[in-house]
Image (cartoon, rainbow, N blue to C red; front, side):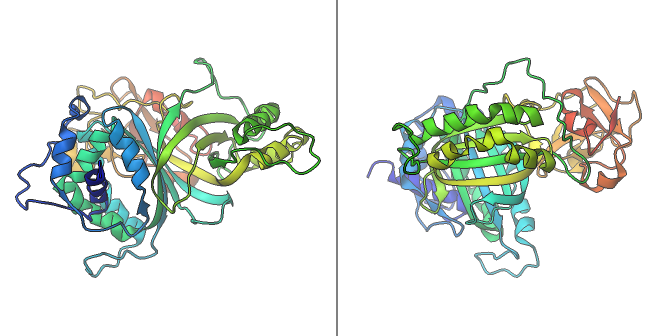
Length: 419
């Protein structure tokens, strides 16, 4: 069956497929140029032998075929909904006292992602699930890949396979969707509005993440008097009708993703993901109670066959085109600030000795303990932050940060001074 070996290759991502030759004589070197040579796919197919499905979900063969049909097209975005084991359980039976989240942190394949030109663009912890009880999701993470072939090559690499055992140990369940980023509808000069419900230390801003599946035909209540339309068209009516109410409280769209297919999951399909910036829970509650929004709520109910609504607090937001999202790696200055790192030992020294990791698994080298004027442009010294949330910041006291990435540090609740 065509592309069946690609399905087997994808199982490598869970550490469940091995190379046919223990000497790894045909291992594909991980580089940023993989998307230029579709012939590499044949080498990957021939080098794999099967061993089983991952324990945290089922790989969907249909999506494998979609990806294999266009192995060098991209970029694409893998969106991960994650629930951790309370305690890690390793498939090789080793004893451990790690939590599931701690085991998954050991997986953190940032070095493999960097080698193929991929990167993490979003990480956020789920604080509440308002719609959709199944899953009990704890984290949402998004990785941008340059093309499917680059992902396949990474998944097939024996060093990556060895690392992936930590993911198998730590993750109890996941849904992984292959998506395309929909161009933002916001103007290029968009400035986030001031909200009458601003964030506070007790009520911070968050991303409301909606995972959506539409009815093929909108399901209105009998007697609604609505013409026949698709579920997607009904959702558009809800959005346009609620837009004014959302603007009044300072809500705006952060990002939209179209789901190409589910890569790992429980068999359910999904259509789109919507990320909406909420200024605070108080702002969200005001929007929920707004009569203008309530008047069009029936369109949303008619549109959706299934959904999750996740209150998510970002640790990293670098989705291209998203307000405040940045999108490019930080620049490296003459003193080494900005050097990519996973640990302090990766940093050059001479004062630039701390690996700052806002997303939790990779980061950039910085000068910690800085004062105003100590940082080389375009970095600014961020200091005097709110002591109440100091434990949640990725540095202690002060550090050099890129000037275009300090919005969250300047805003409540962090309230840092950056100069």
